[in-house]
Length: 280
Image: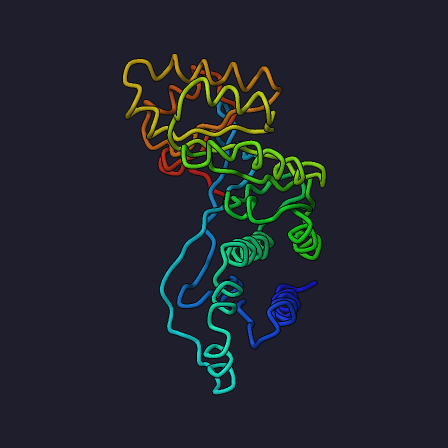
């Protein structure tokens, strides 16, 4: 299906689901954006490269770009509906689940411009989305990626792990297990090391396909122990047959740490600046 036809298909679907004049997807210059209230959602892709052969691209990760946009015009009957059902409408339209679904639909559509069957797409899911959905995680999005010609086996669901969600780990693991049962791959993303024991326990319980860590964080917090900490983490990943990714590599020092610690894949500006290669 052509990109324009897909945009119209998903706009029809959003309109039906919300039972309102809600057609959030727009296409300009072969790129798709999503409108959510006064926010405009777009996609920014980066390449995940093989550590010892950076010109070889394994997958692509996508980050959300959010900018302000003008408010959409509301007809009088829509304003009346908002006044009569303000609390219900707010929950319905502004929920994190709807925002998360819209963002991932935008990313999947934009990925079509350069998607290859042998590459994986890393898509982040908000932890609140997983906690808000009680069963059948990934079912809704499975229909999205199928319409886009993608597959669950080449789609990696990324969960950012923070200390705020430690007490909800069991529920998050159950939700991610639902995704895995549908064929998705699973990745854990650590921007900050909560504790070595907590990370190892979580990796052991979930056995993710990928574990990623920010190079900026490990450099800042670990100092001279950076290499040792990365090696400990990589051993925990290897024990569960997962693969490690060191992200946000901006400097030669981080590139060295990735190679010496045995991390499988890397991502960051260092490779775009020092390699005459595209992210695609």
